[in-house]
Structure formats: C-alpha cells, structure tokens
Image 1 (cartoon, rainbow, N blue to C red):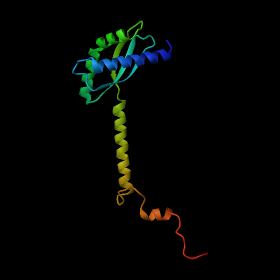
Image 2: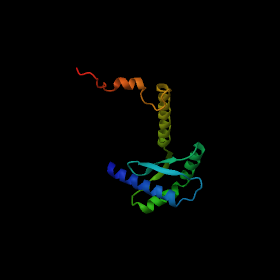
Image 3: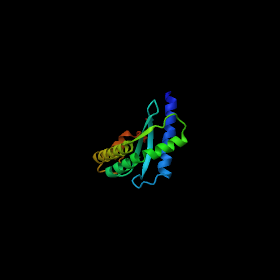
Image 4: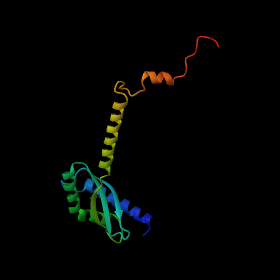
Length: 146
C-alpha cells in the first residue's frame, strides 16, 4: 500500500477514534484525552494511537488502561465508518510531546530570568545602562562652527 494511502487511512482512523472518545465513550477513566496521531502498519492490521492525557502520571496510566479496555469498541466504530479489508487492531501509547514542550518552555523562562537578574539587577527594565546608551548614540551637534 502506498504511503499516501497509509497516511490517509491513519488520518481517518484518528478522526474516528477522536470523535468516538469525545462523544460515545462513557468510561470515567477516559477523561482529558487528545488523540495526537496514528501510525498504521503497511498491511493495515495494526494501528498505534498516540494520545496526550492531561493530569499526573497516575491519571495518565488510568486513562491508558481505560483506552486499552475500550479498544474493541473503538475498532467496531472504525469498522463501521471506514471501508477497509482489515480493521486494524488498536494499541495506545502516551505521547509525551506536550509535556516535554511545556518543560522546555519552563526551562527557557528560567534561563531568561537568570540572565535578566545577572545583566541588570540595578536596571529592572533590562535596557542598557545609561552610560552605555550615551556612548552608542550619535554625537551631539557642536556649538562651534568648524
């Protein structure tokens, strides 16, 4: 199967799984879930669904367990909405990309604050000190005509 067809199938599976989780699942363990992406094997027999779950580690593991228990239900939704020879067997995994990007943002913010504190504790605005600014400015016009 061509990679374009696989990508289209993966996107269709992602849409079906995301909408089914949002509107049809009643499992209280499955909350605050975002379907990030789907990877399908070339023979279309298996699909790995990457999900992002808001919450701590225990909430994520609980939600992942709930999704794995509901895999058959979600596979039946895929079978009714997508016409393929095989209905892929779903596997779920937590995508840590969102958490990692938040952690990187926090680290960058911390570095920025530390640099601001080091460079200008006497100047909270972060601008250059007045003596440096005067040196960089254009020379003032002289009163004498040369």
